[in-house]
Image 1 (spheres, helix red, strand yellow):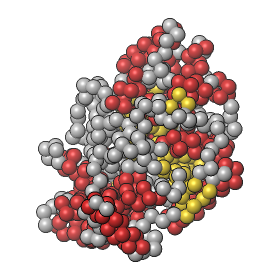
Image 2 (cartoon, rainbow, N blue to C red; image 1 turned 60 degrees about the vertical axis):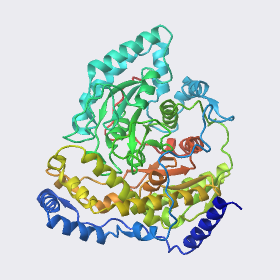
Image 3 (cartoon, rainbow, N blue to C red; image 1 turned 90 degrees about the horizontal axis):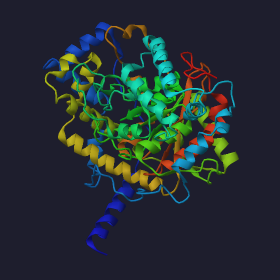
Image 4 (cartoon, helix red, strand yellow; image 1 turned 135 degrees about the vertical axis):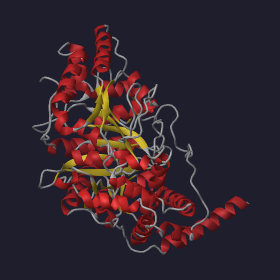
Length: 557
């Protein structure tokens, strides 16, 4: 046995003993008073005032036990995960031998026969609907984009999904697409398809603000994922609204999700540092995919090591097409083939840490997969999940603070809620951040071990459905970290570790609010998630979808 193998064996023994000592499941919601209006402004002033602010920060830091990762790291090996993940298992050419070449897959999904099938009274228009109309002359990209722009003018005053729309540029893109269809030479599977982009992703000519007042950069070139979308013919409609610097990590892609849910676009580009693709997708009844870290090339903004870019779409086929285009994969799974006999891991106390209706709906999906598709439900354990979640908080908060402090005097232009959050973030020390990275390495090892025994893991996406926005948030916003952390219950682990996860709509609660279910897979295994989601869409989602209150059709029947 060489020295490296000996150290690995010692480390394995130490970690095994630590895992065996793990306490029963616990996941603490963050604790702080809900504030809005003048109390919120007063708290923001206090938190940024020397002396008072430090005292309040120490109290909140201790109250939420944010030092737990540092204390836990003292029991861990000195192991850290590099930002460039190993390429082991990463496809470099064709996605897999059993995959269907992308062009063939798209042709099948966008076929007229496929578009005409429907299992409910309501369904969204898909890219196939657009493409079929372009090819048979019932519509052109130009007429469709004019319809989309008119719909945005009608809905956006209420919906507030878009922050910037360049109608002239969108129409110019549409005219070019129309000419390509007339010549019988579309660029790719998304030619003429309107797409919205979150205001965290660079689009040439559009200001990238990250939802702030002090970041006003106008990039001269597109983000790499936008370059790929344009190469496939996509028409960029505009930039979508986001919470200031993703101050609610679970909801910062809400503008992208709303643009899809309302029917304005079939696909939107979003970002996910703590659930912000998956959670808005779930709360609006859409599909969302957070791929493996760095699977989709992206100029990372302010969440450097936990942030992902990815698609939100109203159908699984469109989600998969957008993912393939944005990532450059050459093939997708044959979703018409039977689902392999999968082992689905469920950490039951974690799975059940949600409202009763959500848990029941997600159990029914598991039952469908087991009874009709041969899946085996396997009990798993994720040890020290509470500490992993707190480590994620320390990492993402520190990365946001680092981004903000690049700019002169930014705090004066931040919302009261974010001034409070970032003031608290300053309590994290260099020791705390190093400890959080040790916890991250531990979490990554645990997830890798789990995926040696199961193919995917299953949870709800959120522990609650969308709640009504209180009336008192209009003047100064809101700070409600307790509710936010409950919404994020199931999201941060995939950001901390970097493995892929998908959000699938699986019905609504008794109030009519959408419910989402999350599946997670091993690194680079997005193909499994796409296949599972396709099965769930056919057997569950399509039967239960409801027309949103705010919806407009941009295509004629």
